[in-house]
Length: 71
Image (cartoon, rainbow, N blue to C red):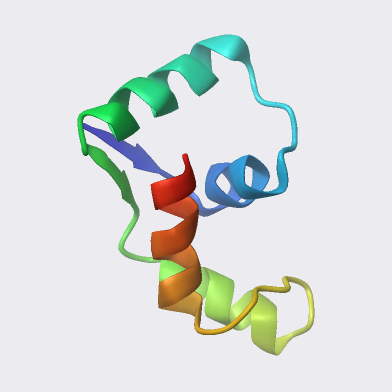
């Protein structure tokens, strides 16, 4: 099981370079359907969207699910 914090989730979605070790752990957890986000992540992203600091297409929760599925 791997729990991503908000920043790593956003970086992974945007394709911002993360270490190979971290990328491998994310991929391994995703392959086992054991990739999760912190409970505070939807709120942090929603606040960022409301303040104009983060842009997501559509609903925040849908964006999170789509992003996790893509990892």
